Length: 525
Image 1: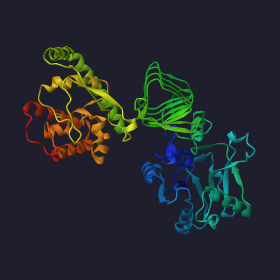
Image 2: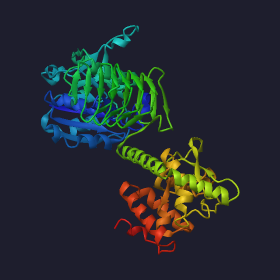
Image 3: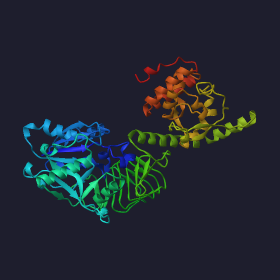
């Protein structure tokens, strides 16, 4: 059997979600919706698939591959207009399948999944088209509560003949219903239909699967208690409370005092911090939910929060409230926590030295002992309204800046700076405001003075005490050297690279400030 799957991915009603994902890639419990569609059809004997894609097609192609994973054959076609892709139906049905005659094909819209059985296959092309319809219980109080088309139908090239070139889905439905009247064919009612065509549909689909009212879907994870599914490698705090039904995906961390449920789905690789309360919600894969948040009837896609009741979406700038735990972001989060722990340990060990240094400077130097400079927390948005500043502490006085947006004494001057700069700045690292390795911390005025391209890459990078520029060019790099160093670091930043720079930093600091610069392109050789 053959299916033609419309998966163009655009839906203006859920634009807040489809900016990042084509609609069929939105999650249903443990996997993208389109994967459930494919597995549901394969289980019923469909082995030939044609996918019509448009918006972010690479995501769907990467997920599905060539079909061998399911013992099937997949072909992909690209539509120019995601809302009017149906001209490709004629190409697929008449161009590629002439040898098969006018055999029926299953037309599928990948943002809906009706409970369809293959026994409804029409015996011959003379009974086509056959539309699968569903009576939506949520429309029962409306005047027009007639069964709605599910977007699935048995069709053939003969049925598609006469369809206008620029048809959208409404025009396609009208055409198919006219052909039904002409041919004397019929509709088939289905008991259930899942969908991701609206925010409400997405939540309702999760509820239907959690309630087990939609059978025959494959789910990973183990149902450890009635209505509670946990996947592999889930860290669940002993004080966390799960109210069924709840599904928690793989590699998730559920913190102290968290309450999940009822009707909560947590995607894979998520972290929910202490004392969160979540009900009737979906947490998309790779998301972080901050401490003590209360979420009800919402969708959380990393830093994007959608209130389903209001149909409103907001992007949260503060990663401590909502944020991303994608693979790179998750590693960055772990590295940040490790930096904070190490800095806290060093502060505890060197606390007496910090106090003695402050006392010495108080007795031997006039003015304030502890200096501060308000710098921008990185990474951040190019939108200045979202910039947050923090006081960078130092025993060394701050000097003015040059036209490249850096202080004249920006580089380390010698081992004494370990006392004057590094020790006070450990407070910033312990608070998560700074890292050990990064780019030079700058004030808002210094950032504004940078050229546009430089400013864009700078804002995407983390700030740190140890910099690429100092390791390679010493205490006073010129403007070109500083730009090349920060551009290089913005691309190469990683744990391995940071450790390499830390070794280089101590080598330059103790062997002499005038050591010959190291070519950046040799760094990773």
